[in-house]
Image (cartoon, one colour):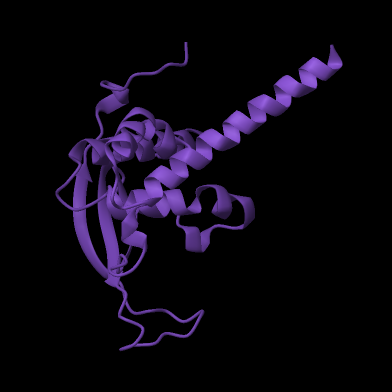
Length: 195
């Protein structure tokens, strides 16, 4: 009985590894066969969810040359302001950086673009509003008037033209206002799953 269990466990682990290797190899080739496209259409959402998806924009000959991050300026009804930043890999430590750092970078650079993906901007704004309201409920009890999101960005120069030593800043970030959000009073349009 124990031997059968061990064989079944070994078989399940082998299938798990083989499945993920198949996904990684299928996605790694830029020119895909019909079978490759079918595999990625079928399992693409899972591939993205577990963080295995890697766009070709990371690699030569034209790697992504933009660094960006997003901050929200929170305006309270009493006239005060606070800053809130989406997590950035450069400001994370240890396991947080390894597990989620690159996902935050990809999310900020690829999805939080000016004048695009408005539905995602609304979701991020609602998340920030909930997060700040939770903090304010136990603190100064300020009420949010509006959120203003800013995107900071700079372009990475070709290292053959402009070399930056490790640890030095690559340049100054430009700042652009990209999104405003005015929260509904008392969470009027918010849905809660906490019964």
